[in-house]
Length: 382
Image 1: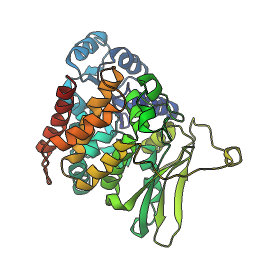
Image 2: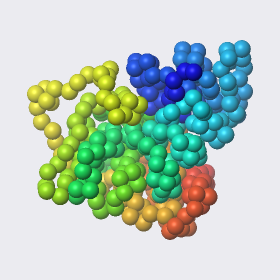
Image 3: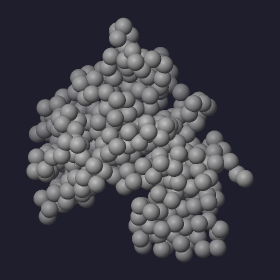
């Protein structure tokens, strides 16, 4: 029997494509692949690595995928949550890379945990929306969960020895392409400007989130769940060079930081091969070439999305789910030219204020809050 492999949920997105490349470079077996609707790329990937199973989330894409792979010997699963869940829970899978976008990652992640799979988590919304439920399930099942975000990957490594001695987490962020801009200046930002991150090569949505610094607020919420800390135990620091991916300060005053190139293949490979570290495709950093590293406090007045996210993190309950879903809808509207850049914050803030709050939500209530956030923004824009 072939060795157990890695399932990549969302293999045609930015993180998914890089995970596919990392696995190919390392010779890791890929057991399953999924996409939302990019059938052409998924078929190309599948014919290269010959996984046992593939699926497309959208129904029409699923029908096209079945036609394209007919006679290939590769199983094509159903669309929707069922297809993702089957990909995550296959008997020939040991670790699942959750690289889908949005809250659709929550259900297959929970199913994979229940099936005893190891989780490499690159999907923010899974923890922002349902972090309390996910992490409780992880503890109950004794499951391994490795974060893929470069910041959380760094914190995971810094805390690997003495987590009980931690005083605070230092969460770094580049500040995005509009660092130092006022709200008046960002009024003229276009989608083309917002997706050009100065350091990282990322998908459009996460690039916009980095520009508004909503991304850093979502990462703060993730870190609270991943490392069982309060919002008050996390300090956000702007670090334009993107070399220190995050750090931990301990109670004796010392700080451990993880440094590395601004290349997502490094934290992806860490999540794929943990606990081993193997040679990678990334270009190593040179400290003499860098010359200096800069650290600044965040400008909450001119990045109100970050301030709003911090407030939702402290409130807890359904607030982060509404925040994340409303932001997803608002960013999509901005990228399609239906609203302006500054209106992203206006839409999300209105959703957080206008949708009812539940302090101790069930999974069903979290999913309802997620849908309510999206619906609120869609209706506001229309």
